[in-house]
Image (tube, rainbow, N blue to C red):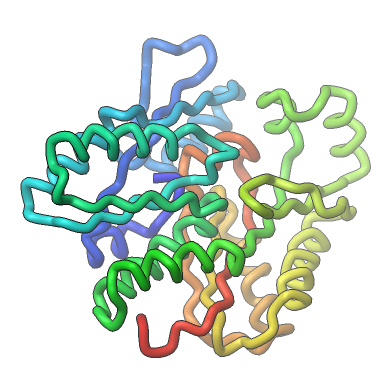
Length: 288
């Protein structure tokens, strides 16, 4: 569920999800399942009200195995599992353990596991494009897997946060750094590269941080016709609209931009007010 795929696309392409878990500090007896018992819309309101840091935990081997067994019972012989970056979570390892168990009971089923080396809609875009390739049917299973492995290096994610306080709650910044950063109105811009979060730069002001994200995207784009774009937001739709309007203005991009409220797994760390742009640049003409 860390890919934050919009619900309508999950349904349209029959994508099977394995949920992450979440609880709040001091309330370990209440465990939520992402997209099952806790929706993003409700999560961020709870996070704002509690001012407590949420803790996330990965799906275990059994969670993956249950879904794989369902697919086996439905007659599927080839399965692709696409996970959150292995540098963020052990969910990829849980999937591998489930695959090994499946091999014992179902040796005729082939299961490929792909570490997307990304998160939120950077991961989700790869999953959506995989579903589109499967639906199109122009490529073999092996060809799809090989293309997805290449796609990871063509995936870019840039994001910024509104309030550094949530980084403090998560232990990523000290209280003094948060205080000074907020006083100076500093906004960090970050990216996901090779499966890790990297700070790019700090700018002053919310609007400047949003326009800078679009500028950074433009610098990387080589062919606007091979672009697939998405944008998550953590309950800040107005800021997201400002960002995407500016992105379209400076790049000339007129295609679809997939949007969704950021899920609990990823949104738990930067907190409410986070938004950004995720894109894949790849020539997929004729295969999706």
